Figure 1 (cartoon, rainbow, N blue to C red):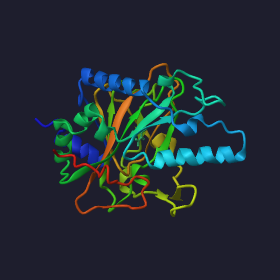
Figure 2: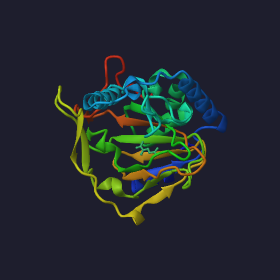
Figure 3: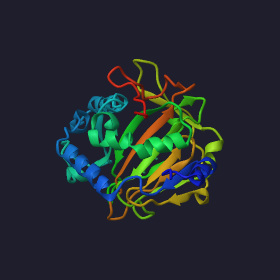
Figure 4: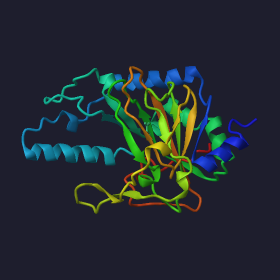
Length: 291
Ligand code: AKG
């Protein structure tokens, strides 16, 4: 039997998301977490985090450094931190393993264990079940949602950041490496919200200008009671339609909520927007999912 059933496909199409249990074994989750632990052990803290800003000019350099670091991270493995984890001297105020918000955006390409999971038979089976002909991998992230300080992710649609023509070509796979619950910051969705287009787009600004990106349009105000929680057990995956509205709360619990997530795009008859922050590069064109 397929890992993803016809019923799951129907639910994904109706709601814009679906939770599938058992994509990974508990051991596979632990191996991915262990590898991330090693990556963080060896992490070079980015220069812009270390800059002490005493003048307006320093502060601007820091902001510019941080924007550059983000916008050129599509084909690299880079480190993004929670707010307030560095002191004025650029030293950690918390243990470094507890300081990270996420690591991105090319684990799927450069880290063998992550690459293996991304191209696993089950993942390829999901894409085939959904009828994807020529899916490619756009980006990947390891998200920590640290206990006590893991920040809120406000309501958004992924196509705001990963825009295609036509819309409807992008899907996120969000794999829980630990149980994700309403206490430690699981995802929440507005079921069916993937059918109304997008309200906001993040675009690159013209070369040489700052900031490097800007928004066209604005996120709507969504009604709190229209969101439903999508808790998922360790090893399960949430499929996220590119236009479905979703969010996650801050993690005020004592449990972390690590996930590995990546986005795929049906490349057949799809135009990837040259205005997106993320662009394929010579070093890393978007790799095909099917092997
Ligand atoms: C996304 O990757 O689009 C998310 O919304 C992730 C949010 C989270 O992991 O809390």
